[in-house]
Length: 98
Image (tube, rainbow, N blue to C red; front, side, top):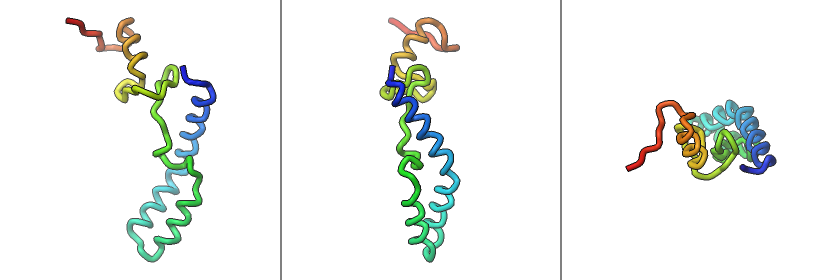
């Protein structure tokens, strides 16, 4: 299980990304399309908080917050995915053996 502080920080970072997403998109479009206002838009983009960038987000296990070995299809880490598959808690998934 990840530390509670890491899980809380990740949740806070996701809120900041969501709050600034529209403004970042507008600025990126200006940078891409309008050469006259490009420098101004770049400065405005740099003034946004660092945590407003979606690249600073980390995929974490939905159950315990583990940051590594994340499976996107289920939102779980490899360990939790295997445990839940063994117990039959994931519909349509079963552990194969041969």
